Length: 154
Length: 433
Image (cartoon, rainbow over all chains, first blue to last red; front, side, top):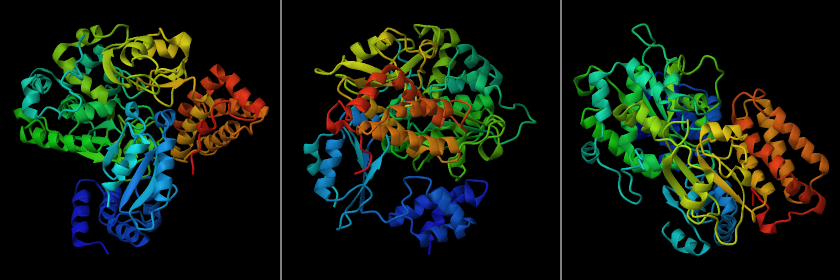
């Protein structure tokens, strides 16, 4: 069930476009903002609300890598694996994260704290290697900074 | 040396507020066009300035606008979209403009919207630019409050709404018709052309999509004229350019310099030269989807004409350096993994061809390559080249591959003959863990 607040926000997005369907990505973002991800149930709720079939909406949802169709942890770590970060040796960062968190790409820690994902170029190549945790960008990274960075996220 | 686009950007400092921006001449171009110029005058001035699209394609901006239907009969509303989806690997120049001076972008967008008589505009920005989003929202509020946006701007009768739209990922969104699909809440597949967006774009209405850096040039062209803009350049391609360097140079970064600054000056003076212990081997001049250039090209001016004549493209103007200690096969493998992953899957050559290329490169990288693999890669550079795919993604992907096969073929062959990567094992690019 969409909450009243979610419906209110989605209605605002719908008011700005010719057809409710045009607001479907914004609606998915709104649902993901409240739940952290988009469950099958949420997907169906949004589809009904904007007048699409669940399959049609899922084809949109699964196209975009920042719409999560599986549960994620409280914090999502996005490790840039594109060319400049690779040249600058991002693997040591990735390896330290997988070792410390004991998870691989696509997995979530047992305590639900972190999900680790690879991500393409974050657009900060002059300060590679880089990663993002939630809304925060970290750059010029070295392995020994990671413990302190991770501690900020509970 | 004039740096019109970045003169008010101080790294590490908040961008100018609207009041501060006005004090240094901000929004003067809006006042000027609304008072003195018809939309056609703006189009003609920008056409005469030779401003070319800074997103990579390099098409004359004024000419692009001229295909938009004008006059009372034209379909309405018309749209202007700022392409701020900077996702080309190795590219970080628009971030500088978005975070550093959001009012300059808004001012440029008002000029562009006026030139094509658009009444609604969007800034389509990638999700990762959180600081830029915050600054742009603030700047939009200020611009609305000051009457530069909204109904009847400065009493001129011209009205323009402007919205920030942040995306949810995917490289495809940078392709202008795919971007329009994303804005409409669809999968970001590219659209067939014609009809071109200028005639039938966002929601089927006439639409112009311009790159952030392109738009940021506009206030300065309006204020100072076409000849001034051309005079900023060292070569025949007009203006300044935001150049960038990433990779193993001493001081990687982004700098606004005269168009046509040589590659050597960029690397040695601005990038500080190669890091100690690393030698230059090659570079991609303008992002992941441009052909390699090598030592012999270092004295070329970085502009559209010279780089194209050398068999590559200036692209976004942000170069990625390949050093002697980085395996060229691994480098290209990383790029092809990106392109295969980011293919929208709509057309068969791209959807099937890019993963094939990626698999072969992985095999070669791991020392499991066979001599015939190079021929398979060669034919992919033709079959995934221009004209064989629905959009420019796969042809762009083939640019670094075909030039790597040309300039670094011996390195590919060594992997195959020696059955291992001659560079350190850690340098074998492994996308999954």
